[in-house]
Image 1 (cartoon, rainbow, N blue to C red):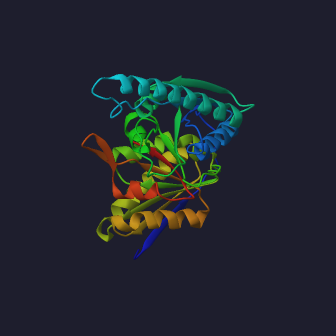
Image 2 (cartoon, rainbow, N blue to C red):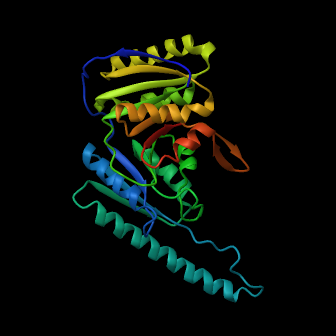
Image 3 (tube, one colour):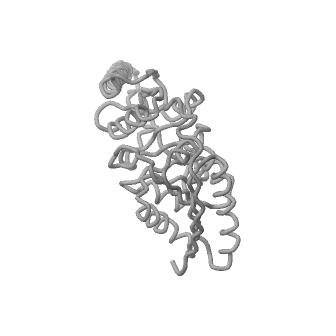
Length: 291
């Protein structure tokens, strides 16, 4: 970072809270999803929202058959029992952690990623993350990247270390793209409730003036929705962007970064760009992504 420009524009919020009335979270048995589930339950309580839990798992039959089909049939039965048991344990974990909340539970024997993406039609916000990113079992895991690009809803990514979202201060990662514009609109319920919002752009020196115009426009938009907001423009490369966003988050004690989710498909897998990927690896920050 070589230079910074910050414009401060503050108004008192005209409204608090917002339109988030239902949250959707995928629940796996065991410890894999506990951080995600606890964060979802805490947020549902805070927002007085309905928490929809989804248990989804599918048997993996590849490689369990023999030439005569006998061993394969036996293994399919055992795997089916395992899936049923896993779904029952997932529901039990969900019920235990959400006692006293408004909840719904859905149990499906299918691929979890596509199932959660479809069920997002009935939710305002999808809760993801809260687990090690190295776990890649498509038969048991709803991958964050897949949810961001397929569910058509904002996705709140819980940090790997878990935690409870305060969202008293929020950083908006600004880039003049469709994804960032949608993220700002999707995040309005959080931004309206925050005490401070910083719209942060990181750009080359020669486009600082353009970035200042853009961030000022975003601040004006937020003001019209009762958001206390400031704009901050930092000079730096794409490699500096995440460091700048984290520095700004620390500066205002923010635990939430709002950003566009940028990715592309490669061999049937969605791959995030460097900034988005790096944001998801922050152990102490929640990230709200829209695609």
